[in-house]
Amino acid sequence: MAEMTIIEAVRSALHEEMERDERVFVMGEDVGQRGGVFLATQGFIEDFGPERVIDSPLAEASIMGIALGAAFRGMRPIPEVQFSDFVWPSVNQLIGEAARAHYGTNGALKVPMTVRIPYGGGIRGGLFHSQNGLLKSAIRDDNPVIFLEHKKTYRLVRGEVPDGEYTLPIGPADIKRAGSDVTVVSYGLSMHYCLAAAEAVAADGISAEVVDLRTLKPLDTETILESVRKTGRLLVVHEDNISGGIGAEIAALAADEAFEYLDAPIARLCGPDVPTMPFAQTLEDAYMPSPEAIAAEIRRLAAY
Image 1 (tube, rainbow, N blue to C red):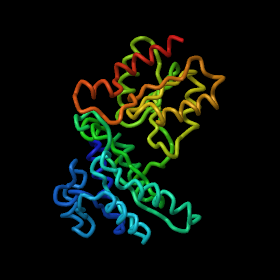
Image 2 (image 1 turned 135 degrees about the horizontal axis):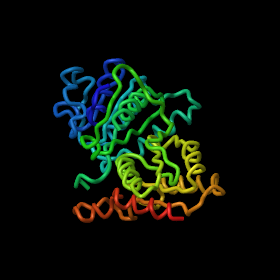
Image 3 (image 1 turned 90 degrees about the horizontal axis):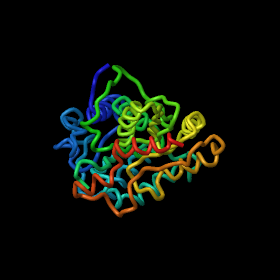
Image 4 (image 1 turned 180 degrees about the vertical axis):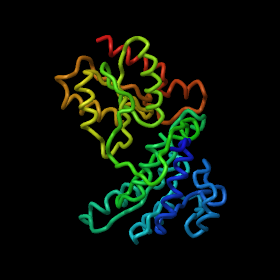
């Protein structure tokens, strides 16, 4: 085992896949000479050269279109969108083309591209084992994968990464902490806050089970339902707006398929419905789900 930060695990997975398969290449703004804004590809241009580490113009639609064409021709591109805020010009290429080409050709046309997108708040800018193994699986998959990396976890979160070759399957969730009183479902930075909250409420005798979704599509419905049927209570936590988020889908799933097991209303703790992440520290802190707010909601549910 080796201990790594999230960004180190991402860099390691990318490097190993580029060594393993010459069809894999990375492209994006500043990924070459600078190694990317978060240094995910630091040193790559020296190791693999400018033909496989491509510095692109500031043009997300072009980045995604070129990656899509390369994937159609059998390459395995890894385009990076520097920040999730900049993804909008490429949405037509992602949703209108990449997401539908394999389905629309009845599987005849494969689209093996992995789109890396740093996202999330908590850094005043508007999972280690899982991160490394899942990224490898994404790169090897013949379908387009959007791989979201929370910016604040890059150097905040550390963990052990197994030595040698390994991957994790895309789809299954992971029980990060077993419990019996309340099911707490989350992903990304919020999942780490949920673990901190679960530790805090344990002092009150409340046993919270924390489910790390790991992937949003496909969604591991069975793990979620099995946990809810055990605890009888469900809290979904995510950083995105509360309306139209994955929390609403998970709440609907539990209501449809585990209603008779519920001992309390389904709860969601999410970002408010505002157009964008606030920049000011006090407003950003108010927007983000915190360990304290999550712990308070767990206690409220446990009281039913």
